[in-house]
Image 1 (cartoon, rainbow, N blue to C red):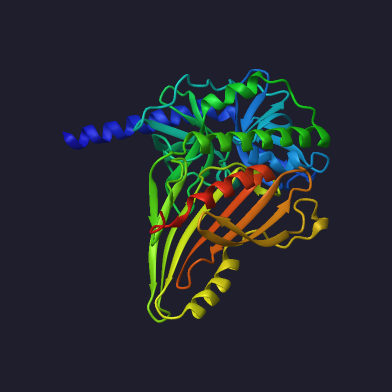
Image 2: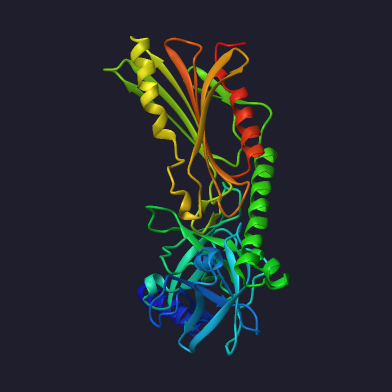
Length: 415
């Protein structure tokens, strides 16, 4: 009897899933960015219909190459009903969304949910994994990720490349989110942009699809990402509380950071290294540039048992390993060649040797990727090492954040 009930329940679930597939498939599309070749594509993702007028939601990162160079690329969408030329209507860099328009589509738009699914609620996601064909994946919603500057729904389901931009549906077949990413090296931990982020795009007027207009809009949104990130850091920064890193200490970073620590003992060298590192989750990216609004912090304490000379030699070798600003061909049109400088800075009783490098954004004047590494010179057999990586910020933001950080780091036995 129990086996009969279980078989009946399994059949009912399968029938329900098949019903969702049949109802939704005409409203879900493969999105391709191409350079004119009929069969070839530069980028492949997914999207879904949200209005009777042929408006389709996908991810910014799916059509980012078109936004960067609309004269070179074009966009098309297709499913079992046909293939359609598509145009860019709007995009949202921070939330990784883009709105496309296509004429001639005869399908029922998907309805946006009024509220997110409850933790533990069953969901299904649609998309075109690896370009192999429209697929449905069942999973569980786990609410929102606890860390990060932007909101991300946490999903227990194995999304795959090509499903970016596809819809996530609840039991009422309403869109609760848009597929956006997976956790690296995880086989069933994925993320979605909440459906509430779609409505602002639908209310905005269309953009002019010229290189100049899209470049100007990207710059405007880059400014907004910087300000949002700085506001989150300021709002989440406690005025009290410290973290210990070996014999060093610092003010506790804002809660928006994801932080880790560990201690390594190198017995042969007589050196103990304590490490505390933090980064922001779910930072946006710009095509050809990479992450923006990204901040990584590292504080290390080194203690030498035997040799001050060997200790400082190891720090000289250690510093370059934490530089991410790389040599660039200045003719690449994306990032400038690096500019670096070194100096000494005093904060209270601590003297720092500071090295700073930056790459300038060629197309977005005033924005940079920054690296700062700083080592204390105050004590012979111990030192504090700090590294800061900031991507997609202006100089004043970098200077203020790093000045504040160095001012808060000290040896624990200092007053």
